[in-house]
Structures are given as C-alpha cells and as structure tokens.
Image (cartoon, rainbow, N blue to C red):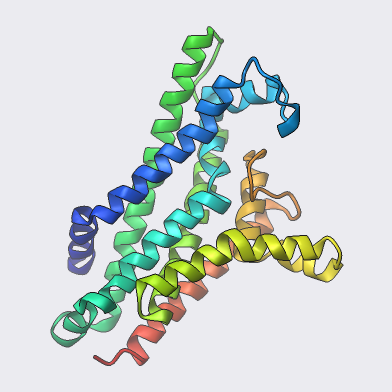
Length: 271
C-alpha cells in the first residue's frame, strides 16, 4: 500500500496525467456529443447514421455505451500512452534505479505502479461517465426530449470499459518495461493500437485466417467487447466474436502483460 500511495502521489502531481485525461475528455465530448448535436438537422448519410441513431446515441440512458464506444481505439491509445509514460519515464529520470537500489522489493515496486494505474483507470472511467452523462442530459434538455437515467445496461458497459482500459494499461506497462524508455514505448503502442491492427483487418478481408486472428488481438478483443455491450458506431468497435470470448481474451492479456512486465522488472533490472 505504501508503494501504491507513493505512485498515486507522483501521478497526481505529474502534468502529463492531467493533460492526457483532459485530451480524452475533450475527444469524447467532441466526437460523442458536439458533432452529433450540430449535425442533428444535417444529412448524415455520408456517415451511415440516421437521425434516430444519433438521438439514441446521445440519450442519457446510453451514457454507459458512450464511454465504452471510444475505448477500443482512441481512448485505449491514450490510456496506453499514459501507462507507458508512467513506467518508461522512470528509466530516463533514474527513479527506477533509485527505487530498486534503496526502496521496497522489486515486486512491491511494480505492484505499486500497477495498483496506482488501476486506481487512475477507475477514476478515468468514472469521470468519463459523469462527463458524458452531463453532456447527454444537457442535449436532452436543449432538445426537449423525454429521457431517463441509465440502468443496468450502463453498469454492464462500464464494467466492459474497465476491462478494456485495464488491458491497454497493462499493455502500456509492458511496453514501458521492455523498451526501458517512454519514447519508443509510446511510439510502438500507438503504432499497434491505431495502425497495425487496422492494417491487419484490411489484409484479413482477403485472407480468412488473418481476419479470424484480428478478432482476438488486443484491439480486436476490446472492439468486440465494446460491440457486445452496445458501443456500436465508432472506429474500432467490432461484432465478430461474442462478448464472453472477448472478455476472456482481455483478461488473459491483462495477466500476460502485467505478469511479463513484473518478471522482466524482477529478473532483468537488477539496478
């Protein structure tokens, strides 16, 4: 717990944490509500969205789906960057060397970082839900719609959001430990989350086995879980496999990435 508190204090005082959280909140508001609200009276045929689909996406009862909708790709990329920076920057600053030399046990130090990032992810998902719900209520009030508060479907969507965010966090931690620096970890993570898997899906349209593989890769699993809980209509959201299968793969990725990062930290980084 001491390691978790120390890491939380560091992340709380770190400007990059608040910059990335702010960027994500602006993105989810802009693409989830502002653009759709401005286009309510426009022609959305080019986006493949009917006016009723836009209205449904902005209803307060669908605020949970609005949270999970952005996490398979862009939100996940931001979380991955935050985790990679949180771990990788310690190599450049020399703080990992100091911690491993004079601080707690190596496993405790890594567990503290993982625990602090887990707390931060929960706060981020909860904050996103509150912001999206506030925006949805505002739009419903401005338009004079009949609306209701989120129900069980929102809780299911938020649970899926936490699992997706946990996977991207563990992936970022793993990349930060493997590369022993923030820049390469961030570059590799963004390339994978935004470019590589999308290219593989394009190739998969021609090659069946590759398409099946992309469904269970980290981004594909996140997209399928988001699609299973109602997060349709956003980049990266898929419906190729069931939500249960996608959730199991995401749990496996969390265990593998976090376990591999911890093992590397204990066995490789002796000082």
